[in-house]
Image (cartoon, rainbow, N blue to C red; front, side, top):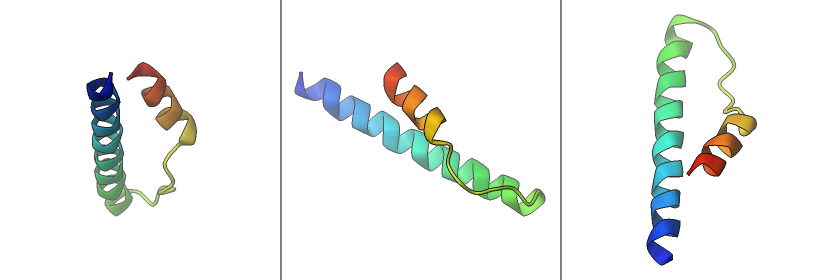
Length: 48
């Protein structure tokens, strides 16, 4: 059971880093809102 929790945490951290990196690249091209969508994070957490 412990490994499933570890995998879920790693998955969330990876998603967060990828989202931040993607938003960082987009904000250089387009002046967009840098906030992370909490609904998207919750959906990813439920999927994990």
